Length: 411
Image (tube, rainbow, N blue to C red; front, side, top):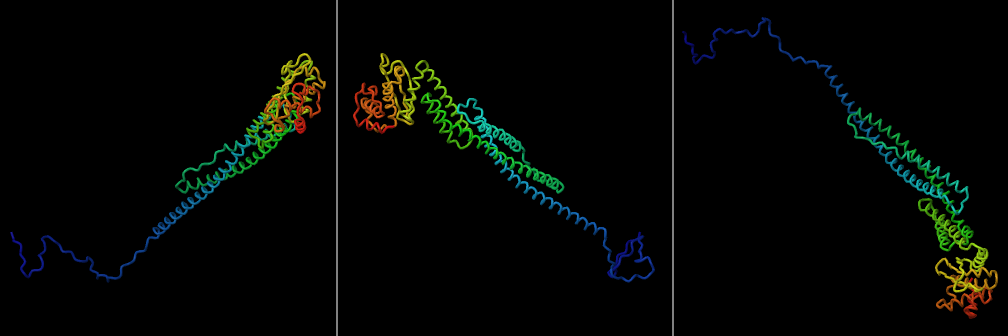
């Protein structure tokens, strides 16, 4: 076995390894090529085009997305504006329709008074009936439009294809809503015109009845005072009506009810005065009213009044009220009618009317004592030219001249 050699101090290379082969630096025997500049590679054209195309697509998508967003927002804003307009128009239509409904309901109440004691011309009633019918048609048309629901946009979509589709739907909603707004405005105008017609014709009916109340009262003189006062009050309320609504209808019904009471109380009074003396009684009542125009007079008849009535005697008794309107109730014995139209009957009636008319002349005499009250009534009868002792002279004595002078100023 051979020991490996150790290099000496001058040795700079190791001996070849056993079995190793040294390869030449080059296999070819040709000379080495001269080293020159490195060749530049040509860029890949397809890759560049792809990158640019992708960028263009991305840019186009971005523009489309932005356009879709802006278009949606613009359409949504227009729809919001139209919704605000539609809401305001609908509120106005609702108000107009409600007002119309109140008027037509009141018109029905007026028309449905089955016993209109104070007659109104057929033309006036017919005009109101037509106006109410047309008003109900206009109200129904407005109500149908009011029931149409407004569009309610949902959440804003994200992607452009959704935004474009939703924008188209919003635009359709806007167009439909604009059509509805125009229809609502037209319906509101129709309702307002119909309501005006009901107002005009309804007021004409109420006013006509109120103005006819005075003539109606004059045609029913035997009605009781309370009924007459109620009729006057109801007529005054009716004349004050300025619009047709529930209150107006109630006022009209009250007026006709008061007229019905006029007829009812007159019938009761005439029934009480029926019999052989009815003609004379009614003549005496008319005579008394002629002496005291403007004073409401009501009459009661009995066999005996104030202790007199038999054996040719006559009795009378008057109760009066100072409040407005001046009114009085005169009680007369049947004997006054039996002796009518004798001067003594007229004189006694004039004395009682002297008490009644004092409601117009309260400050002309002393009403603190019964004697003064009776002297006044006697003086008034004398001042009217009724000098028969039945004027009060026989029962209460002759009144002072100053009373007669004062009474002459009470008419």
